[in-house]
Length: 216
Image 1 (cartoon, rainbow, N blue to C red):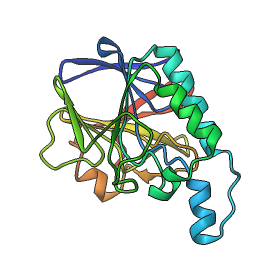
Image 2 (spheres, rainbow, N blue to C red):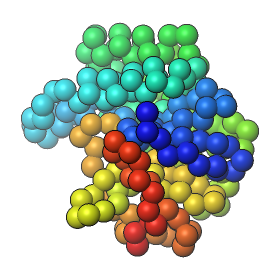
Image 3 (cartoon, rainbow, N blue to C red):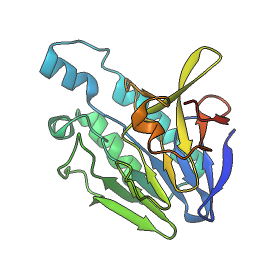
């Protein structure tokens, strides 16, 4: 697997082509913004019809990353479901698939702004989680030190094409959205430029993760 290896707050991390973050020394895989149930929520709230395959595609990638890394801990950084009703109304095959992925692993659901309440899928539910030098939460904070977050779905443009990306500086990491049908916020947006240091980099997803200076 092609990965981008880097050191952050004394932790050696691998950014995977899918947008997941792997911490090999801890056997930990971190993903953000799965937004499972998005097509169902669109149909329920807006009458918009999207192909109903997003959960299958997202979980296929997640299973592949878990298998490839042999992760024993999985952290989902919030907005794992598109809303509470989507979490409660999972199709049985999807719910069973998630249960199989969780079996035998430490699984942590970080609360997000789309799914603030607990879901009845087991695992641990936390507002934030600190492990060694890193703190995992959904939305970045202004005074971050060793923070890993998501929420913004960052994207950066290279060769005329915008791709989901990891944003990284010395104090914080912001992961891209992992789920299918998730949009994105350009790295040039003031919400992101205000958070990231001047020397921040963007690492683009794709068959081989590509690091570039964060476009501003």
